[in-house]
Image (cartoon, rainbow, N blue to C red; front, side):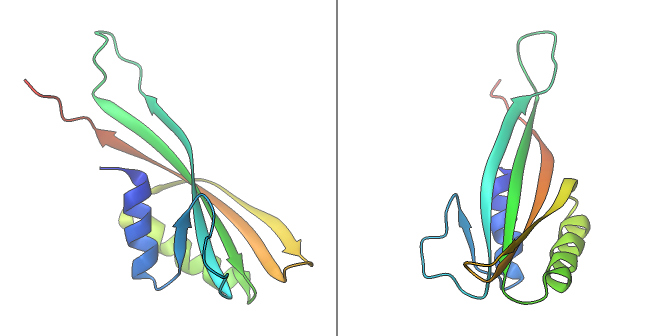
Amino acid sequence: MSLLSDLKTLISGLGIPVETGIFSDPAPDEYIVLVPIADEFALHGDDKPDIDIQAVRLSVYTKGKYTKLKSRIIMALINSGITITSRLYIGYEADTGYHHYNIDTENIYKIETEE
């Protein structure tokens, strides 16, 4: 299990084009780029972590009204149980015509260890 794959599934289900790292196809009017920003193990005392904390940034780009798209994505994240740690409007990119908005997410995954 990974946050990256959970987010790809969630965003694809909303009908929004999504890529990891960079958007390789010609850019549509709205799309999301997922950028992994952290993977860490929680504090543990026996050198055997049992949870994996993963963080991914959603870079949202739209030529339309960003607030409507932002709200749709945020509600989908909340309803799926994914934690939102930060939201930030980056700005309007005059050279491309896109509004750019970032949503940072985090989730905890139990590590399945073999016995």
